[in-house]
Length: 560
Image 1: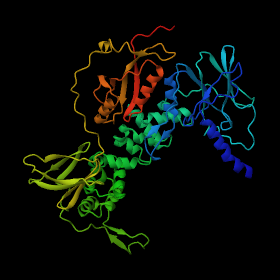
Image 2: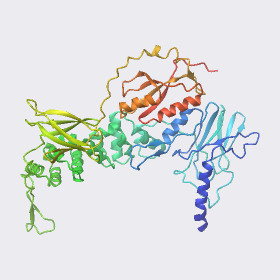
Image 3: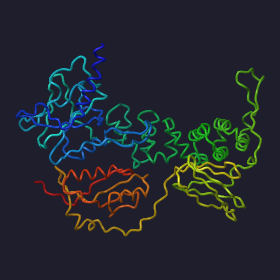
Image 4: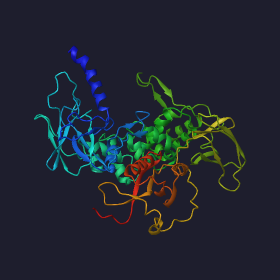
């Protein structure tokens, strides 16, 4: 037992050291019938399903890492990762990759691929060590922690055959890793690599139909799959219904309160569940007097005794809101409450509100703050006289004074206020706090594009672009080297789009307007396939970019 405890870390360290090496040829590569190969570093490739595969193009290689590459997060509960592991570069014009994710308990005892050799018209890939593991050696769980073994060898068109080096070594089946994610797979009650992939990819897809997003939200609430990714989806964050369904998921209640508290409080048809989350948000802390006024005047709250009772305890410290709440249910709820633990009728306390303040007679403030977009707000004054207000941005030194004109004959007058910092805005009048308003709504729209309309597609790429193309190995289609289609996330700001275009030294030649996809003319990477793949990878890594696609020349080239 003592030897196991000592040798375990040594074995693990040895495995990690061996798996991190690159450029190391297999030991038997000097034999005439064996093929030399180089092992790749795939520690960050987390495939949860056994399989074997041969990869002959960069698209399949990139897709595999987008599907199963390790995700890096600055915080463990961040809805979206900061980055995803990228694959080691491979020149597919001259090479190909053989991949094995072991199926048995040999994953940590050396590499899965022992040798590759010629055998007639096939490539014979021998898997597993030629001897059983020692009793003390470290072995991996067959379902968790088994690494993917990947080797690079010279490109060959022959079919690969995978065989076991020992009779007791289980040869995995052909990999199904490239099966596209689907809603049906995500909602499956079992466990599979495709289900995990579907939750990883689909929950972040803001182009999914709302009905599919709702099905995912319902399943996440029932713990069929992880719902954290949904909280990073812009369409989910903007939906009161979906956030309410996800209220059992950590951080969903916080998002619902922070992004939609005022909208729910004003909604006279709001459902009980969303109102309960907003009232609970008031209980958790923060000074929101204007929000309390809206809630006590909300008819669904007044008609629901548990909600009304809960709200009363939240607003007891505010004389005006407490008075309105108490009046709403005084006829249904006794104004004296028996103290728990006492004999019936022997001790009770009166439900009272604090003494009225100068604001007690107001149901809503006469000066109101409304978020417009980005860091811009509307300050509205419904008084017949001008209103002097003060404002400040929370957690910053920014603040100032503002005079809003009298309403005149209109219901209210308004002025626009734009802050430099993005944060919670507090509004004061006569030295008292009257409203707190967040600015987590949509960004301000960018000005309309004033450039000339692009020429028709048939003439756009002729004559200078059609002469510059690249042909991926094994493909029959030519791709423009200088023209790519770029899709930005719908949450990417217009200024971020323009900054990315300038940074790439590119030009918009078609597509748009934002947030529709753009066709960009980029600097020529040259005719080599590897350089073109590197260009696409750099563009994909830009913050705010959802994906980048090459554009095919209209006519295919003849296969030689």
